[in-house]
Image 1 (spheres, helix red, strand yellow):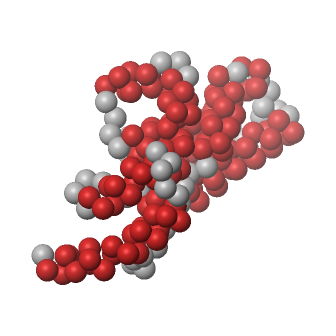
Image 2: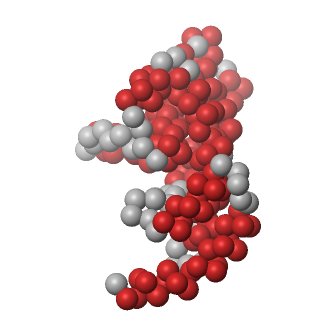
Length: 213
């Protein structure tokens, strides 16, 4: 019987899948005290973060065109675009929560901590690429414990975030009132408090329309 069978499953382009793989690899690395498995776990965690960053870009932009994809593939391109879209992503999450607060059945959105994603990505990259970091890692308890602690910290951060509701409001088929509020909030014309106050005024009308249709 194979050990840690999930390692042998077909690969998925999904952050959650990579996080599960990393957890299994990390557990086996600790059991065997194997540096190679630590590196593989770090790679999976880094790929999970890449997937999440690209998802944030997609959410912030609403859709992703070919020029954006090509820019993401360039050296440091992913971070450059992430820096550009982060303010819009944060606003979209807050706007989604503002409207969701009127509907108890809709969960609140959990916004990813972009700074932590970038910090962990850099730390994992150092572990994956630097031979000086890897050299003698298993032989020195201090080095081993430090690397394991880092991976456990990153895993805990990602796992906790993935368990939360990180989806955001889609504007596909949205009412023109919501679209108008979003555009005004995005460009800074109105505040989040204004959004809530204005939506509270039109919500009864919107609800009655849904009942009639």
